[in-house]
Image 1: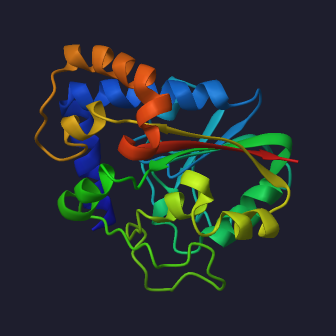
Image 2: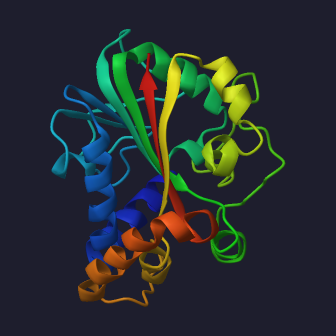
Amino acid sequence: MTERLLDANRRAWEEKPSLRAVYRDLYRRIAAECTGGLTLEIGGGTGNLKAFAPHVVATDIQTAPWLDAVCDAHALPFADGAFANTVLFDVLHHLARPALFFTEVERVLRPGGRVVMVEPAITPMSWPFYHWLHPEPVRMNEDPLAPGAPPADRDPYDANQAFPSLLFGPSFMRHGARFRAMFPRLAVRGVRPMSFFAYPMTGGFRPWSLIPEGAVAPVLAIERALAPFLGPVCAFRILVVLERL
């Protein structure tokens, strides 16, 4: 199941130029937030970050030719302080126990290192899309900081798209204060809403698209201009930056 999905996503990436154009913009934004040094990519997926950032160790829960290591984000097999950055692109909402991951990332990051994440944003405009048209669920009543180990039989592609917004969304929603209390050495340096129109128009990794590649750049320019005004209402994604104190 997981290998078939990864292969399908890789094919969609190769066959949809509009999707690649949107993701190139997101990868550039991620790379711009990273500090100098070795970067750990969690959930390397289709293996694209290396084209935009140097010194990347790409990992995932399963093997693929473009990955450097196979590991579980809940138990990272790396030394304390080994990395300057940890990057997640659409990964946090797939983790069964985000609290375990943040404990691990706090350990493997050096002081001054960063966690940079791009994740779904649950807003008034995005919620209908994610709830009705996206295969992954949105469960706003689930605890993103639940204790304990991940269920042994859980599919790593299971998800709750609400997790990032519950932790880092507008006003840090319900669990922001708990996150800050549990992880005082992971300071929130930025939460920026993005992806208003271009991303949903690409259809994501589904076979259809409503926007040609040439229209992506102008639409993204409009999005950046409107971000301060429309972000809390229209964003489909958030860019979250944490810094290890």
